[in-house]
Image (cartoon, rainbow, N blue to C red; front, side, top):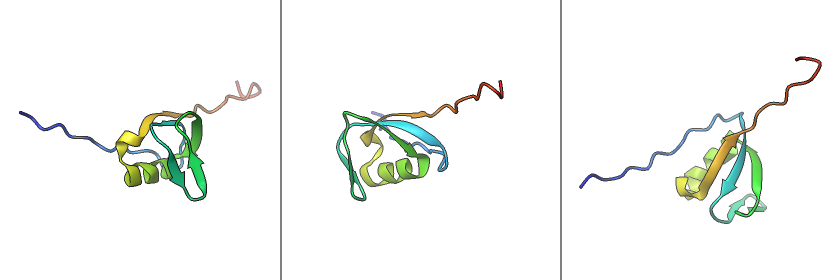
Length: 72
C-alpha cells in the first residue's frame, strides 16, 4: 500500500491571499475564526501552516489586483 504524502504549499511572502480556515487559529493577539474569510500576506499564511499543518487551510486564493479605469 502506498503512503500518502501531504505537501506544504508555498505562498509568495509579499502576495495577498483571501483565506478560509478549518479551525480557530491564534495569531498574536488575534483569533481567526473559520466562519470568516481573512485577508493576509503569504508570509503570515506560511507561518500559520508551519505551526498548525497544511490541513488548517480550507482555501487560499490570491487577491486579484484591481485595475484602475484610468490605466485600462
